[in-house]
Every structure is written in C-alpha cells, then in structure tokens.
Image 1: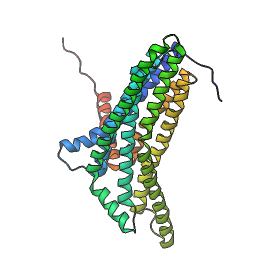
Image 2 (image 1 turned 135 degrees about the vertical axis):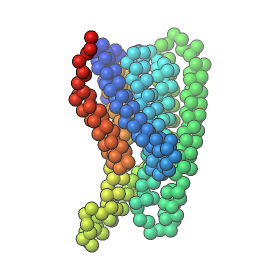
Image 3 (image 1 turned 90 degrees about the horizontal axis):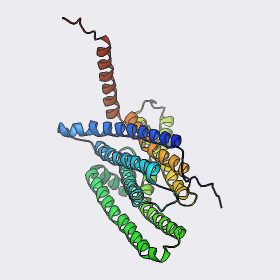
Image 4 (image 1 turned 135 degrees about the horizontal axis):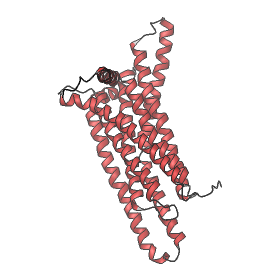
Amino acid sequence: MLTLTPVLTVSYEVKHAFLFISVLEFAVGLLANVFIFLVNFWDVLKRRPLSSCDRILLCLSITRLFLHGLLFLEAIQLACFQNMKEPLNHSYQTIVMLWMIVNEASLWFATCLSLLYCSKIVHFSKTFLLCLASWVSRRTSQMILGVLLSSCICTVLCFWDFFRRSHLAATTMPFTKNNTELKLQITKLNFFYSFLFCYLGSTPAFLLFLVSSGMLIVSLGRHMRTMKAHLRNPCDPSLEAHVTALKSLLSFLCFYVVSFCAAIISVPLLMLWQNKIGVMVCVGIMAACPSGHAAVLISSNAKLRQAMQAFLLWAKRILKVRANYKPGPRTP
C-alpha cells in the first residue's frame, strides 16, 4: 500500500501562498460567472426572450458562484482551522457536503446544455430519437425545474445520511473516550461514507453527458465525411455549430474529470495520509476548473463574446479618456 509522510501542519509561507492563490481563483471565478449571469439577467430585466441555451447558462453561472464561494470557504477552513491530528470538524464536513451537492447541480445543468446541443445539431433518423430531441428542445424550463427539484432531494438525502452517521458516531463515542485514535477513525469513516453517498448521485448525469457528447462527436464525423464527399464549403454553418458545441462540452468534460480526480485523491490524503499540503493542492485544482470552463463558455458563445468585446472597448475608452484628461490650472 502506498504510504506518504504525514504533513500535519504547514509553514506560514505555504499557508499565505495557498490563501493568496485561493483568493485569486475566487476572484477570477466570481468575475467570469457574474459576467455570464449579468449578460443574461440584463435581457430578463429588459423583458427580452431568453433562448434555451441562455436560460441554462444563467442557472449554470448561479451554481458556479455558489461553487466558488464554498471552495473558498473550504480553503479558509483547511488553512486556518482544521487540525489534521483531530477529527474533521462539522464546519469542514458541512462545507464539503454542500460543495458536492452544488457540484452535482452544476453537472446536471451542463448535461442539460449537452442534451440541448445534441437535440439542435444532430440529425436523427429514428422516430423515437426525433421525438426525444423535439421534447428536449421545447422543455428546457421543465428540465431546469427538474434539476432544481433533484438537487433539493439530494440535499435532504445527503444531510440525512450525514447527520444519521454523526448521531451514530456520537452514541458510540462514550465507549471510546479513552481511545483518541478510534474516535478519529470513526469520524473519518463516517465522512467517507457520506462523501461516497453524495457522489453516487452524480452518476446518471455524467452518463447522460457522455452519451449526448458522444452523439455529437459521431454526428461531427458523419458531417465531415459528407463534406468531403460533396466538396462543400469549409465555412459550413453546421460544421461551426458542431465545433462550437463540442468545444464547450469537451472542455467541461476535461475540467470535470480533473476536478473529480482531485476530489477523489484528496480523500485518502485527508483521511489516511493526513497530508495537508496535498489536500491544499487538490482544493486549488478543484477551484481552478470552474473558472477555466467559464472562460471557455465566454469565448465560444457568440452573445457572451460580443458582450465581452463591448465591455473591453468601453473600458479601453474610459482609460483613454482618463489618460488624456489634463486638469486646468487652479485659480487662487
């Protein structure tokens, strides 16, 4: 079995560097997702109709804001309050549970986006798939409500399981009051089971995401073969739609897999090897992934890209005006 040297405490330099990186990741993620939220929410305020894609992006940006907030709280809790020698405190466990629930909701919204792209772009020949694609493209609001409802149910189930195990551990603690190591193992084992229970809820969403993304890849390959056979223009709108959709979906898949691996690796680092620096690295990776996907969404979505270009031009004009501004001489 792989063993690592326990790193129970870290130096002030490492702690300050970790907190600085956490603040930076939180700021970048906050700005990117607030931008996506405001661009779409401005249309709501102006009573402009939101497309199905915009509605999903609006909900996805809200979940990402909560995600970044929880990861920032986890970073502070880990760096300043959690002692690796002691049992995991309830604040840290609650933050991790909430992060997993919000992360699952974010995955479901990304799956909705993948299903929507699939229904709009892929050309189906089977009647059942045609009806399913038509239903998905017309029922975006119902899918969003379904995600919210499933997130609420998941929250209740996860916290019911978490508090049930905590109560069970509390009832066995009086019999182990002279055995500190046993108390630590009971707490960590209960946390691991709750962690596993919460992550199992993400499996259906992840499988749906893989299936719909796979169908887009197959459709792109079929479309490329058709283009070669008929010598079509390389600037084909259907090809651009395929590439844009796959760019946002495959980038999400890569970021999600990296974040998932970091979360899984952090569990043995926290519970078995008690390596605080390793857990800090994992939390930093988990916080960087949603920011990276938000940047990809802004660059690949025409509406968000135009809004970003307009904002940058406005900021450039403001800075130019300030640079050219010369205050007049003061009169006595």
